Image (cartoon, rainbow, N blue to C red):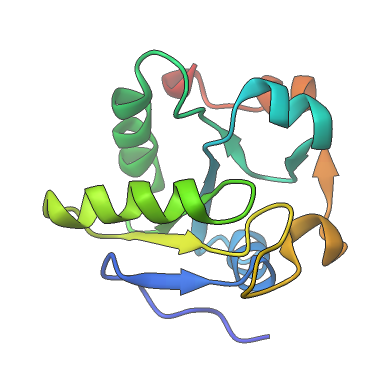
Amino acid sequence: MTLPARAQGTGVWSADQAYDALLNDASRVIDIRSREEWQETGIGAGVWPISMHEARFADRLFAARALAEERTVGLICATGGRSRSVLGALMRAGYSGYVDISEGMLGSGVGPGWIAAGLPVVPLDAALASLPEALV
């Protein structure tokens, strides 16, 4: 699979592209779903859980952007609606370097999603344990 080009804030990646970029250290991915959703399905392996439903979301999102350095930051939710909305807000505010993983964890009209694609997931406690200190 080919890695996506550096995003300028308007990109859309498949779950497979996002995982390949993670494996090749070309991206970081943030799961913006709720804790309840994370507990239900797990978190993509290597993905940072930063819920848009919790305090300090914006601070943590921008801290993740800084930690990613020159890497693209993918946003994933359940089916692409929330990640598309957050990406739109970031674009309108002039931020770049983010992409939408629009098929999400559960799939959408654009693809089967992380889980159905057979990509690895880890339990919430494991994902939280590997979260960089700056994102806690």
